[in-house]
Image 1 (tube, helix red, strand yellow):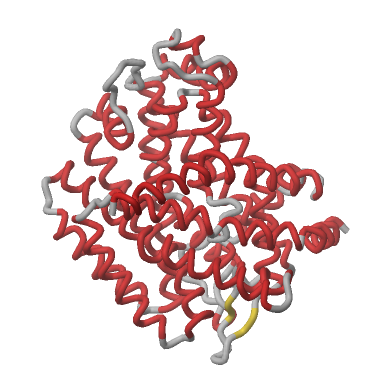
Image 2 (image 1 turned 135 degrees about the horizontal axis):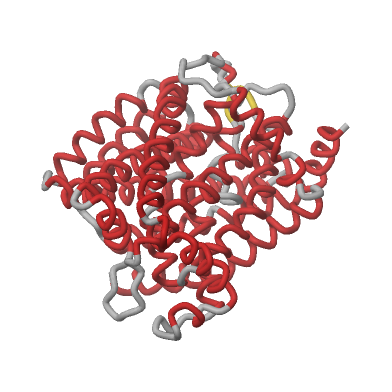
Length: 451
């Protein structure tokens, strides 16, 4: 077991500290330039499509999949998760306030990458034997590379995402829910896991339409609830807000200017943790959200591309930024050994303004964020199970995921968390290869949208 942990740790270091940071950011820059800064030119259109399609009514798209808004909320359900609270706090502790600047920069370029993912998912979506729409990286990877190589890359991606998100990733999410509720209310973690598993099973077994109906209602409500709480705290901490914002920009290039070297941080750490946590949260280039965007009922592939960009914007520029400002304005980010980090740092920041209600607020938000991520990640894995093993296998897959939710709520095993990170990183590689191979097609479709 020790040998396995060592190997997994070494692979994660190479993937997340070096390879993926360069590859994901470089891919984002490449698509940004090739598509003529699509995230700037089409931002207004994306906003209009987002609010123009806003609905809590449970609009149906029949066998064709989801409405454009449902596809976006399903993608955001996966994007906005525990990383927006715990991940943000970890980035601040490990990289300093400047990490937020680099998080913004990586998200800006990531908006063009996710545009490409959504466009290709739409372009190469297909219909199964029952007449249901399906799609995702597995299909555009095969389109980019014919023959055995394409099948290998697509199969590798499918196996990695099933393990990373469907199984181990959902254990991580349920563990976050169990921890938060046990801390806030003293509720047994196992009981929390059972309740989450039962509700999740009800949604899973209802198919695509029930998943879409759930996300389009819950995602806007959870986002607004969290943002309202953050805005209230920022009003309470208004006197400290200018300095908090200043520290983000100053520490991006000179971390010692604020903490005077007490944290021992440099620009390298700010960049590393900001980019890594930002990309892990918004999932741009990782190949997960295209499964939702493929099912959207739109007139042209590029129409879903512009609305997909809004998911990254909401996740990083709004939700993550609000968390960062709450923590920075609270004064809880202390440059001393043994200082609070992760969820404890976030809870301390909310407690500073809300008192003991801070723990309750964080627990409720963690429930919404983590549970919606479970639903989104289950769906992404299900699409790949169906592609590899057929529709009948999805019932078995659902039962395994439900069991993992229960087990994950009570058992935090570092190896499971590390394996989730490893397969999460490995699935990025074939996805980026497919995206870059089809970049010419993306540019052609984007150009058609301008005409």
